[in-house]
Amino acid sequence: MNKINILNTSIHNLTMNETLQIVDNTIAEGKQLHHVVVNAGKIVAMQKDLQLRQSVNESDLINADGQAVVWASKVLGKPLKERVAGIDLMVNLVQMAHDKNYKIFFFGAQEEVVRKVVDTYTDQYSPNIIAGYRNGYFKKEEEQSIAQEIAASGANILFVAISSPTKENFLYENKALLQKVNFVMGVGGSFDVVAGKVQRAPLWMQKAGLEWFYRFAQEPKRMWKRYLVGNSKFIGLVVKEAFSKA
Picture 1 (tube, helix red, strand yellow):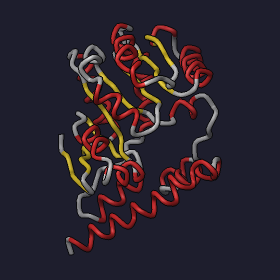
Picture 2 (tube, rainbow, N blue to C red):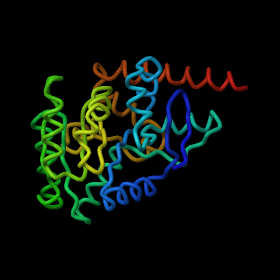
Picture 3 (tube, rainbow, N blue to C red):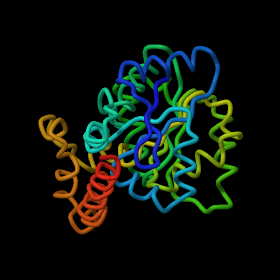
């Protein structure tokens, strides 16, 4: 797989369809693929959080979740084909699970949220795609037993809806225990969207790279630092990198 490196971050240069095909092939062959997405905020955090950087860069498959990352890749002369948003990938993989009889474990978010996600997909498709689920509240010493529970569920796909860097580090540190799960992926706040707790931006805003602003407008007190401060730092990093190569 073709890979670029910008701002200390490795990213695979893939389309959505190419990513889906890789995941499908991995499951069909009985192998394992550890997936992660990166956006502006995560790349900023990776500059100082070396554990997060390692967890991300040593993943098997890394997609650009944010439109800002695609923009940065073009500015820095390493253009990515397109954005592969984590939530869109998750939705496509749920459809794939239904079509190909794969099973999914849903891990993360509040109890009522993850239950709503499971109920939604059970109604939309079938209970046959559900391997199990668990909320995202746990102690550090519980991680291994949770990983063992997931591995024993018979899941082909694992979605982890926990904030960074906890989800990346959980997947990285428990990779061996999760070996029986063919595809593992952190999905951030995607469960909240599926459960209807958070509304996603209109398509035109997604394409314009303004999805972050729509999310910020819904929860300004909680999101201002992540988006306004984080995005400003990201732009600064891109500009600094561009001028260093000029």
